[in-house]
Length: 257
Image 1 (cartoon, rainbow, N blue to C red):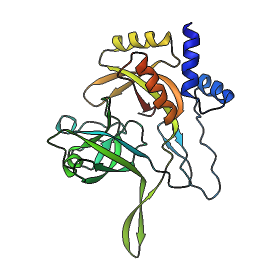
Image 2 (tube, rainbow, N blue to C red; image 1 turned 90 degrees about the vertical axis):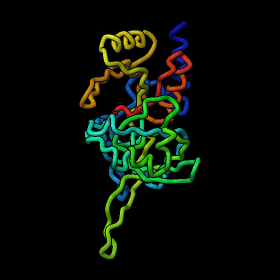
Image 3 (cartoon, rainbow, N blue to C red; image 1 turned 180 degrees about the vertical axis):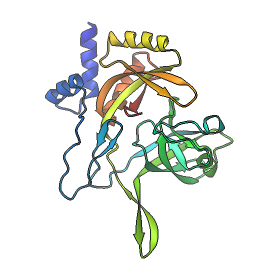
């Protein structure tokens, strides 16, 4: 009975694939360790962590609405997910799935203020929030006092500097935010024993239950994750299934985080 339920869940997660592709992707991991092919004249694939991302050939935007939060002094000087040192006075932010170094325009829907930030961290790890801004970025859009704000975020791409008529100008090239290696984080613990118990429980019903270890320079966290998906859309659908199965803190993340 449990096996039949899981199969139906897996079909829903990957319903956009053909049946043959579904079987291969779920049981083979849905990912590739080699770079995708490059069409002559098109942008070359780039690698983040262990995952290859293939840039789009046109400006396909990433647009998302939700709640923004910010993090400041407590994390100032700690290591971010991409290895940088967090600077609360820099224009940076954390996002669960966008590739590192993606520049994002954040629009505060309450007061109309905007800011541009660069993704260099993962989070926020609170359900319902889509982006964690640095202190300075949060101040720029007027949300320090409230702590959170409804926002719309639009990915601008990865920035390169270009010199035009002797003047330096920031130019963005768009990347594929939808393909890569995504998984579902179900919990995070400071004690490994607690993480192992949850992983064992998940193993009874789901594929690829695993633990990743993260140290922010002060503490070590054992993150429990499950599943593998090759697109963000699949991962979001999987997230919804996990929440319906009783894992209310589940959320989709890029596996490089």
